[in-house]
Image 1: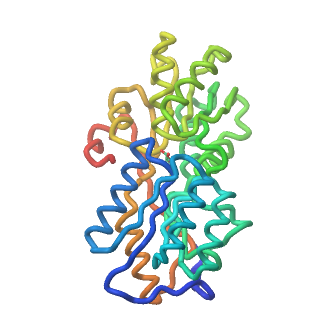
Image 2: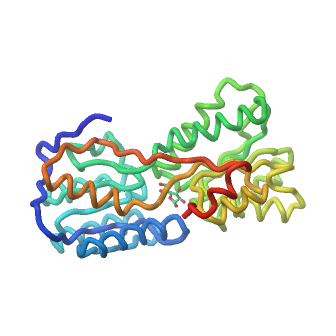
Image 3: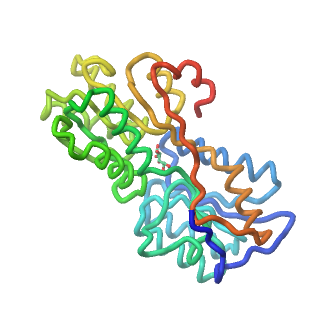
Length: 306
Ligand code: GZL
């Protein structure tokens, strides 16, 4: 990771307490709720004031949420940019207003805003590697033979772009592994189910579903069972996140493999803020390690899933 010397970035004075913003994308799934709780718990533990906003799934509203934080003159902003391009504008507005931004979980288009120049750092998972790990596992497990439906996360979000890239890179050149359809399920359970129902009719020979998150994987399982298929057996189900409900489904054999994406950002986010205020050098990226869940370890790891 390139060390981003915070030259020219807005400074953060060393204080005993801060008023910080956290601009969340939406609260429609357990992953997002766990992320928000982790941030609120840590702010409370530190005695900091947290200005929390929920963009309700709208990138435009998330941009205006950041505007309101700037108007409130918060000391710093934690931002989980819903989509890579529109939220770059919010990052630049905060920087112009002299407020340091730390990106959590998702990132912005690197051509529009850069770590060390426009924002301090990105803290989150390596989504390309997450997608690649799913592809590698599938290649090994199916010996290179699979008819795949891919359920995509939110269009324009870095996890959706990169989980797709990592997966498709991993299986490229495998003539026996075919993605017959890739469609947006917006990281949502209900949309994942609806999309899977439609795609299952168009591709009855599918034998693998790769969902970019647990919610869409669980929606796909409902669609498979409604069609009389056995998820995890007739059709393999692969996912990313590793929430409790999904890890239980791995133990039950309905999901075959999950790469974890840990939502508990609080401690590392605020530690990075304090390090920045103390003038320490901050890496351009701070990558969270992701475990994996399989039939062998799911029961043992269940209690540590979010
Ligand atoms: C990933 C995060 C994604 C989760 C989804 O860091 O942005 O958004 O994988 C969530 O569950 O909706």
